[in-house]
Amino acid sequence: MKKPTINDYRLYFVTDPRLHRGYAVLEQVKLALQGGVKIIQVREKNLPPADYLKLAADALKLTRAHGAFLIINDSVEVAAAAGADGIHLGQEDTSVAEARKLLGQDIIIGVSVKTVEEAVRAEKDSADYLAVSGVFPTSTKKDLGYYPGLDGVRQIRENTRLPVIGIGGISLCNCRSVIESGAHGVAVVTAITMSGDIPHTCRTFFELMK
Figure (cartoon, one colour):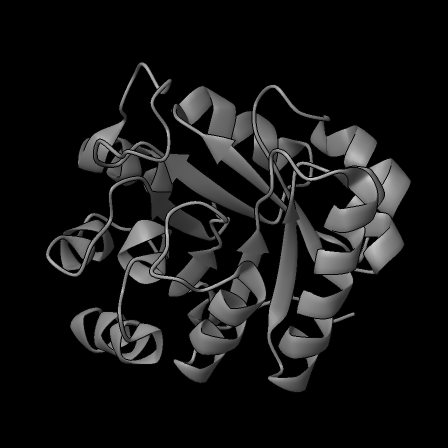
């Protein structure tokens, strides 16, 4: 299985089943792909495992058709059963080493980090990319506590060879500053899901981050 290029990480879309303009998750995936997104994470906190698996399998058909990558949030079981391209882990989730052992060397493993120490450990543990979590305040994560901000993005980028993306409160207005701080890309939730024209919004993100 091939892994994403640095360019593929430029705009990383995370689905949301709650914050949207009438689009179900699969519709969000389809529209983001039309807008040129190459990495999509399906994040579901409350779906029963069987429903999460069905959603993942359906999303994978869409990403495959567009030559894009599907990442599953948290669930090693769903990622394995669906044959997804990757999994994204938080600091409290399954360890990178355990996920690698269960899912194999080819799986893409991303890790949410806030500090240089967490970033260095994730790289040592064989993560494929890092998401600096809490670049700006966000309504989708109210329990972040410490916000690494743009300085955190800069420091983490200087201390890792892995692709670094920023996540948290990223919009069309501030995405350029995240790239200028050293990130290879941005992960976006509500600025895309709450858009009335998702493909156009995605294309605008790409334009602004050239």
